[in-house]
Image 1 (cartoon, rainbow, N blue to C red):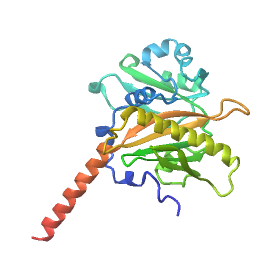
Image 2: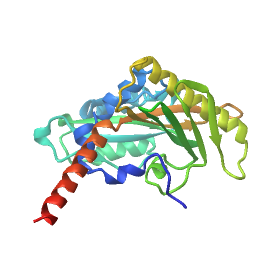
Image 3: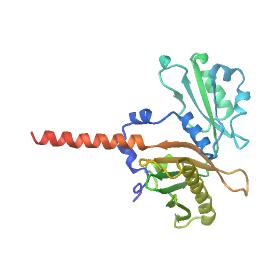
Length: 264
């Protein structure tokens, strides 16, 4: 049945406010990916007025492995919470350079009081998430073309699923679509990413894996060129342990409250 048995089934139970409470901001999470040695892209964060004075200087810095961005995704946010009405994001990916520059020029805001974060946007050949849990299990789910969030929301079933354990990353088990093209090659690519994440987690924690470890690594794959192997780009890491603790705590309180009320 579509949308069931995903590694994200529990997320619909989360109060949206928990995300801002329990997760560091995206720049911190990106920094963590880099510390772990996972391939990511180079974004820029710059004052909006400074960006507007010479956009090309900054846009040329947005790249992955030296490859300039094809298009851009960006968010504009105030420098101070005191000014804040929240961040301004287009909600759309794939702005060209001219579209981005024109969008900034059309905004009726004080540019000096705002910052822009610009990230590269490449065509995604595949998207996926790799999950690592405290029980030592590691699991990757992948889908062609669509955004990774299509899996996390349970809108579609993953086309590829790679499962295994941290202590034996060479013995991964793969499940794939009924009629895939180039299945073996894609399985090898996905398994390589799963092993890379597993090795990074083991290096970070060693033998002392936290009992509440619950990590999701989000990534996509781009094509460097014709007849070249797809390259992974990790763009986010989410530690769900704090949010899950909150869910469990609220569930216990809700049950206790229900018992108290029904026993009156």
